[in-house]
Image (cartoon, helix red, strand yellow):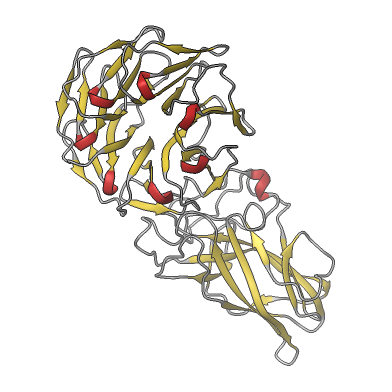
Length: 491
């Protein structure tokens, strides 16, 4: 299915003349919404100077300038570049060689990230070309076709038909030719770009955000426009909606590594780590809670709405539970395997997994073992709900790129991840929008059909991923990892 991929940043569009969309020529124009603005950057050409530039409008393009047009700001999503620009006064043809560079984290011209689409990457003319100095009719001489995009009968140039345009890759050049009478000195037009993407409403860019630390960050949790991350040597960072910075807890945590954190929209924070350590923030005060165990705790979670019971899991099969957020009790565990993650919660159902493929289920009364269908260590989990909010799918992820999927929480089967890297964290935003992160900067995405890689721009081991449940849309994500790495996933 070809779907329209729309920008969510209207302000960014005001500063750009390109549009990336997952659509082919359609039978009707795409209805202009807020993202279609009149302040689009205009491509301008000087016939006399032999130059071609797309930037903020200028009466005459400066001599010697090339083309540099992008979506949402210079060099953000796509980059068109030109070379060999010139005008033949005898044939009255103005020509330039244009390439398209993919600057987003997804491959272009593919619905699944692997198989190339035949539609290609199209650069289509939204308006013009029209003379801005001089007079005469200007035509696009050698367009690859016309289509209905933002209007009818719009010429376009097609790139990479039948091949993917990978993240960071640049297409082969294509010569654009314009019929320009010698009575025209300068002319202009606006263009957009349209292509198919594996996840057309998902993350387009992973941006490295300063964390202020080089210590390993093992967990992150976001809610209500804020977020917390924890890591080695008692590191606790918070995000205030603008930047990340260290948290002063007043506690002696420097000799404790923290591995898990959960941040509720009500302002509570729970972090767990070495020697059974549980750190709590009430919204005003930090304190250390008694866990009554000395085993390392690797993960902590709350109910799906983050307002009720919490559970923590750790080494030697330890499982802790609190109903009031104050007093923790140890629950009977059917395993002595290290438990690295406690997972999707739906009603009384809760899950945990860990070393050697250990998988546990809690039915509201007791924990029992289930088969994960793997002997590999499981470190991450993602759950997804249907349109009614019912948990329908679970993905367990672990060493060697392992992914085990279940649609009922009982029977699991492997999925091809496309990577041999260890996978450590996951999040499901819907049954067709799931992320897993792992070693060496690995980020993979499930679009409902297959897993495909995303270029994270990092070589750090990525340990966890979180999304603010109160933020609209599905593409405002946080990822943390070794070396203090923090990535922000945005459109």
